[in-house]
Image (cartoon, rainbow, N blue to C red; front, side):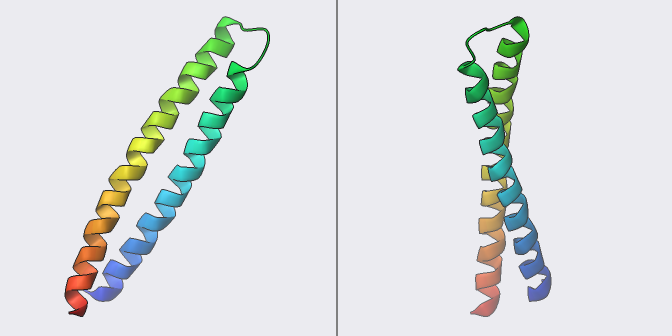
Length: 81
């Protein structure tokens, strides 16, 4: 494959990983923030569970992208040798 294509793909994956990392901390922080609210209603519990669920989803997606990025970087390295 073309090195320019692989370089751009690596940059896109890195950018997606950055967005997933930020989203993971925002949703996890929101879930923790809701968990320290004094008055807990059904809606608060729902937001806490939803926040932790999305944090796990973003965490998984981050490492899927990381694995894909490692493969792309390996192909780039093979092309340089």
